[in-house]
Amino acid sequence: MTLTELIDSGKMLTTPDEAAKVIGCKPETLRNSIQMGTCPFGFEASRPGALRKYYVVSVLAMVNWLTGSHYTDLNPLTKIALEQQRRKTK
Image (cartoon, rainbow, N blue to C red):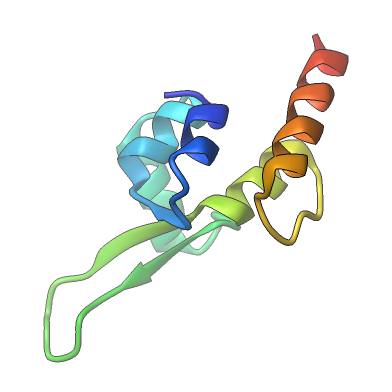
C-alpha cells in the first residue's frame, strides 16, 4: 500500500499493519514504538472493561510526520500538495 492509496481510502485511523506497509518497516517494530511512546502518530487503545489493548495509527498525523507538513485535513488539495512534494524529493 502506498501513502496515496491510504489517503484515498478516506480512513482517519488505520492499523499498524497498514501503516507499516506505507512506511516500509515491520508491523511489530511499529507496534513496539507505539507501546514505548516513541511513535508520534500512533496510540494504544482499549475498549471499556477489556483487558486487551490494541494499537491505532492516525492517518493525518502519519502524513504530517512523513512529509514534514502541518495539514489539518486530507482534502483533495492536500493530495495534490503531497504529490508535488513527492516529485521534488525524487
